[in-house]
Length: 311
Ligand code: SPV
Ligand code: MG
Image (cartoon, rainbow, N blue to C red; front, top):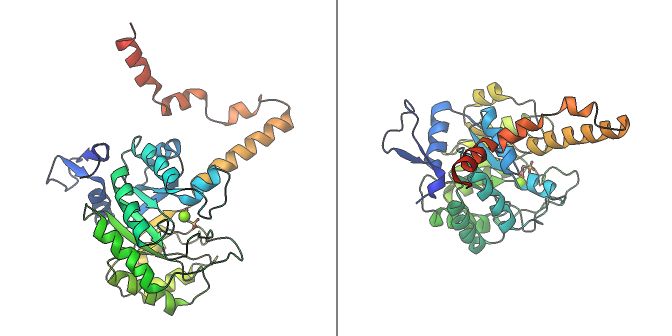
């Protein structure tokens, strides 16, 4: 059963009428079927997740890169599953959007994957992404990064373990191939993707660090597999939604590092401005007022509780 805090009432007219409450994994699948393409934004904290939800995205990417960066660490399997799960649970408690969990390599072999799927499903995730690199991984977009792929059979075992472990059949198991990141061509990426579908993957995430979108577009055109594709257009931002939709088989776009980059951009500019100005006299006019932070913190609920219970 999904955790109680990850079930919501069905919106009138949503077409989901089987039960007054619909589990999050089913909502993610339904949204994909309804729109053809879901937009998933990266988060690393409950605050960023609230902002993603208010902006109107379809779901959240519990990003390993973003949490690593938030902790001042490289994205190289340095944060633990426990740290990532703590973030995910905190997010799940604050928002009603489905969460796609970035579990890197699944924290080890198929046995680690079994443990991870149990924990992530229990924590309230709707989908899990596992990538076909060796543990410990090296972040994908770094120039000259040491990228090693797992044997296909071993990764198939990890995907099969994830599928066999999930309790909710709507919980998505997404196999991510880093073949292009590791410098392999399209044929190898397609072969790996097909092998992962045979192991039971619900979707294939194809990742690329090529600045031009053709690597992804060519993969999508050549992909005749039975499951849809997920992309992360961090390195090739020009591939926008209409072009993605025209390809036909990409049903999920994950904006993989935009949350932390946006936050860091604003903090960097503001902190430099304060030093340059010798005070906050200008900076305070350019950033959100503290009342907006109070709203995001739900201070009004605290006020109501104070009035009711503090005696
Ligand atoms: C992440 O956001 O953690 C990702 C995407 O996995 S990337 O950093 O581009 O590999
Ligand atoms: Mg990641």
